[in-house]
Image (tube, rainbow, N blue to C red; front, side, top):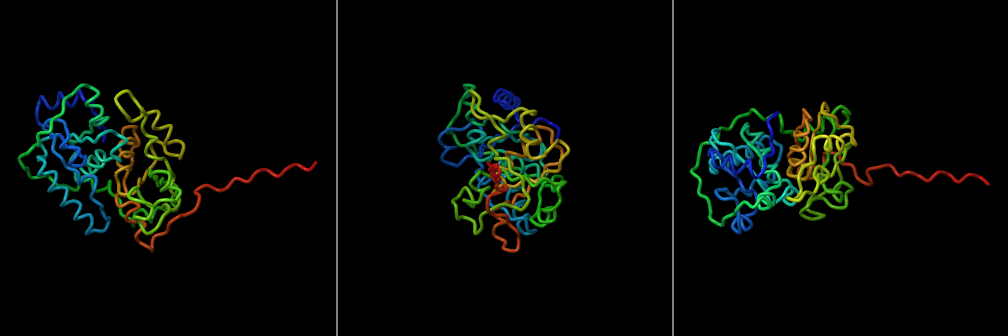
Length: 295
C-alpha cells in the first residue's frame, strides 16, 4: 500500500471535475441531509455494522459491503473517496470504510483528510440534494483478506513479543472502567487483550486551522516508538469495533509501517467469549516509593 491515502479538499475537487470518482459520506443520515459534498452518497452502515470474525460473520461482512459499495456506484473503474465530519469526531468512520474496501480487494480508495470540516475550511460548498447513483456490480476479491484477523489469530500471538498487539481505545476502556463507547456496560466484560500495548487513537492526530489532521510521518513514528513499534514491526490493531483502529491503521500505513493488520471484531467480539482471556486492573505495575533512609 504505497500510494497516498489522504487527499486534500483541492485534490478532491480536481478529481471530481475529471470524473470517475464516487464520494462517500459516512456520517449519519441527518448530518448528511443537513449538508454534504455535492454528489456524495450516504453510507453510514460503514460505521454502525458490528462484525464477528467467525467464517459466517466474515461472509456476512463481505456480502453486505459488496452490495452496499456496489449500490453506491463502485465497479472497479471508479476511485472511492470517503469522508466524515472531521478526523477525530467520527470515531474513524471514513477510515473504517477505507479499510473495508482494502479488505474487499478494492484498491482505488482515498480519504478526504480533515473530512467535511477541512472541505468547509477551504470554502468549498455543500448541498442538501440527495444523490441517486446508478448501481454497479462490485468486484469482490480476496486480495486484501490477509489484512483481517480472527480472534483465533489474536489468541495465537498473545505471548509472541514479535507481534505488537496495539489497543487504540479511549483511556477509560483501556483501564477497564468502561467496556465501550456505547456505555460502560455495553459489553459483558471490561479490560483488555493480554499483553497489549496502548496508544490512544487521538495521539495520531493534532489540531490545525482546518481541524484535526494526522501527524507527520516522523511524529507518528515517534508515537509508535513509545510502545516499541518501528516500520518493520508486525502490528495487530484492535479497538471496540474496528473504527478507531482503522484511523490508526491509516496513520501507521501513511507513516510507513509495513505489516499492519486488524482484529476487526475487536473488544465487542473478544469480551463476549468467556473462553478468551482478558487482563484487568491497572495496566502498569505500581511503583513503590523508595524506602526512607535511616536517620
